[in-house]
Length: 210
Image 1: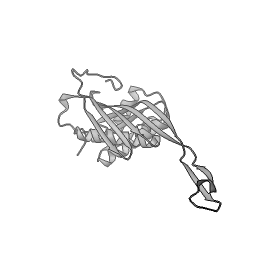
Image 2: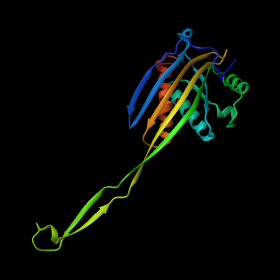
Image 3: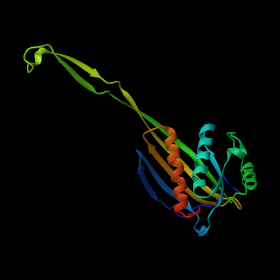
């Protein structure tokens, strides 16, 4: 059984692009693979594994995915609750955790890349004028003062994740997508959007309950 490598090679990659625009965010889904022989199979109990360089990010990914899966009536177990937060994930340990939780599938979400850009926006400048007296239409009878608002920094994030679904009984890779999320707010909002998009695609592909 191979959990972290592809057991079956797709003869032809199926590409599906979905763009979701809401609340200043945008997510693109690219479906890379779906086992053609999986028709009709829906997974009810999933072990959720996040792969990230940072243990806090891994835990957050697993928690968000588990919460969204639970909202779809799927029993989802965050991997860290069984495997801890060690950066090294061994295949045997994943298999044991799946068996211990009676999971029929294993969802592995890999945080491939994160890029953050900062854009400095200059503060607005207003002209304040105070008349010293005399003819009010005479420009030179006014004292003029520039009022400048402080500069602000706008952050924008791009996160790319590759998510695989495996059958826990024989290790077959069932499904693979790549999701790219653009979000002009905080990083956690990007992860939330990623989790929603992944679970939404699982439902659309009828791999979890409707």
